[in-house]
Amino acid sequence: MKKMNLGSSKIMVPAVAVGCMRMDGLKAEEAASYIEGCMEVGANLFDHADIYGNGECERIFGRACRLLADGSSEFSRDKIFVQSKCGIVPGKMYDLSRDYILKSVDGILERLDMDYLDMLILHRPDALMEPEEVAEAFDRLEQSGKVRYFGVSNQKPMQIELLKRYVGQPLLVNQLQFSLPVSNMVANGLEVNMTTDGSADRDGSVLDYCRLHDITIQAWSPFQMGNWKGLFLGSSEYPELNEVLHELSEKYNATDNMIATAWIMRHPANMQMIAGTMNLRRMEEISTASDLMITREEWYRLYLAAGHILP
Ligand SMILES: NC(=O)c1ccc[n+]([C@@H]2O[C@H](COP(=O)([O-])OP(=O)(O)OC[C@H]3O[C@@H](n4cnc5c(N)ncnc54)[C@H](OP(=O)(O)O)[C@@H]3O)[C@@H](O)[C@H]2O)c1
Image (cartoon, rainbow, N blue to C red; front, top):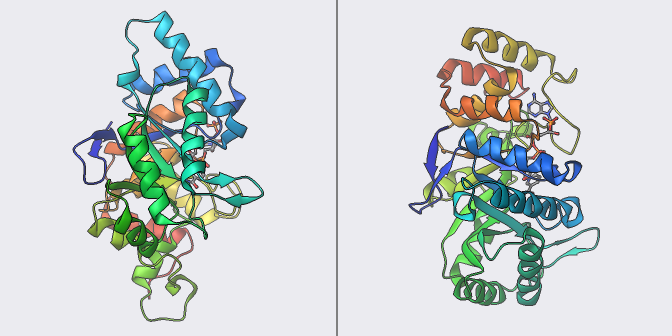
C-alpha cells in the first residue's frame, strides 16, 4: 500500500483509508476480522462519524478493537489511526458550537472505548459557527489529550480561511466527495470562462486551494454516483464508463474498482481515498490499486467516459 503524508504534517498514513460508515451491519467479531485484514494490507486509518449508524458504527468498532486487543499480542491502539467527525445533528441542524464539539468528542470516545482520537473532523459547515468557539474547543481537546490532530469536511476555501484565523492547530484534511462521475472540482478547473455545466464553480476552487495549503483531500464515496444514487460500477447509467473500466481492467490484470481507484490516485493532488467496502477481498484489491499508475491518456479517457467534456 502506498503511504503518504497527512496534510502538512510528518504523519505517514495509507493512501487508502477504511470508511466505517457501513460497519453497523457487522457483528463485533466480523468487524474485528475485517479490521485485522485491513491492517494486514496496510489500511490502518479508520474513518468514523458520530452519526454513522446512529453511533452504532463507533460502538461496533470499539468492541472489535477490544476483542483484538484481548485476543492478540499483535494489536494495540497505537497501530491504528482513528478519526471521527461531529457537527451534524441529523434531520435537525448543524452545530459547531464549543459545547457541542466537546460533548460530541466525549460521546465518540465512550462509544469507541478509547482514550483519544487521532483526528477530529468538523463534518459540515455550520451557518451559525463562531470560529472563536471552535478554537476554544480544539485547544481544550488538544490540551486534555483527547484529540491529537484536526481537520474539516465539505468546506470551501474561504470557510477554511475563516477557521484558520482563529484555530491554532493546522487543519490537515478536507473530506470531499470525489469519484469519476462526481468530479466537478476537476471540471471547473478545465471549463474555465465557459457556460457549460462543469464550468460552475461550486466549491471556490477547493482542489487548488487544498494543494496550495498542503491540506490532504480525503475523497469520500469514491465508487458512488452522487446524490446517494448508488454505485456507478456496473450501473446502466454509465455504460461508456463501465466499458472503459473493463477494458483497462483487462489491460492491467485488475478489477474495475482498482481502475477507478487508480484514476483518483493518478491526480497529482495526492489525495487519500476513503473506501467504504466491508468486504476484505475488495479492500485488498483497492489497496493494491494505490500503486497502479494509469497513463495520462487513460486518465482523460475515463474522465470523458464518465460524461465530462473537454472544451
Ligand atoms: N465527510 C462526509 O461527508 C462523508 C460522507 C459520506 C461518506 N464518508 C466516508 O466515506 C466512506 C466511503 O463512503 P461510501 O461507503 O459511500 O464509499 P464507496 O467506497 O464508494 O462505497 C462502498 C459501498 O459500495 C459497495 N460496493 C459494491 N461493489 C463494490 C466494488 N466492486 N468495489 C467497492 N465497493 C463496492 C460496498 O459494498 P460491500 O461492503 O459489499 O463491498 C459498499 O456498500 C464512508 O465509510 C465514510 O467514512 C464521508
